[in-house]
Length: 268
Ligand code: NAP
Ligand code: MN
Image (cartoon, rainbow, N blue to C red; front, side, top):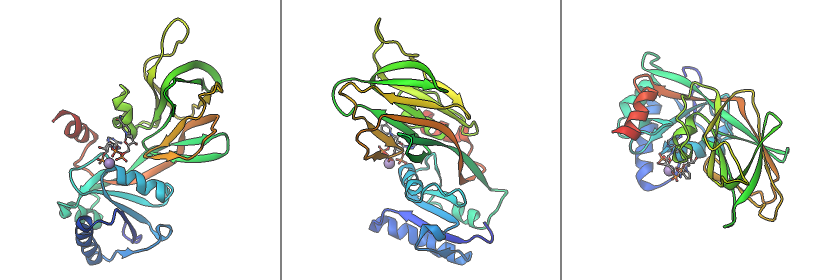
């Protein structure tokens, strides 16, 4: 990051966090970084907070492919936050661009198109679910072939990095972020003699396309969630999901392997 030193800071402006961010600002000044007010002028976008803040930083800055994202946690490490305000030496190594210590990762994203019109990116998942008590019905197409008719609470399609989030709670597999893939998981599907779904998580490679068509049966006002935001679209009929060509570049410490993150979060 030697000659690209314009930094945009994304965080919730609380007194407690402000103090911690101030320390990082002072460090940045020492290494000749410039702060910018508009994320459009930034080459580096740093979020301070948890994984949720990192997700917000991406959505609010619209998944800039030409910027490097850095997640700084204000507590423990997270899946996207490889640095922490409680140990600024790690951040200092990153500012020195010590490539023996840090590495740029490229995380796959999903491209979600709603009703063929609006496109969004997500780095965790897209969900579609009923907003009323009744079950709702979705026709699932895989590469334009009618695959199954789902009836239940909803469906989720996750990225590899999102596989450790909501997807995991639904019994989905944890996927290595180096695999450009997407995973479809079910939320409480009805399976009986009338309705039949695959019933297990389905991992698909880049190049495939999922289409989820909401069956118009009266319960057809689903809530669509993209990462941690609900889309304010009321009458969506179908969504298309595929692994996008766009990746998110993020900085990580070389010592913090995927295996470390998994172990730290789920096994210790
Ligand atoms: P939240 O409800 O405050 O947090 C959900 C938890 O998931 C937090 O502990 C968050 O970490 C963690 N998380 C986020 N992305 C992750 C990832 N890729 N791998 C492992 N853990 C992850 O909401 P939020 O912080 O805004 O995060 C939004 C995410 O929450 C959604 O994208 C969805 O994946 C997840 N979610 C999960 C469920 C569920 O498991 N039943 C339900 C709804 C949403 P931080 O504390 O560091 O932010
Ligand atoms: Mn959170």
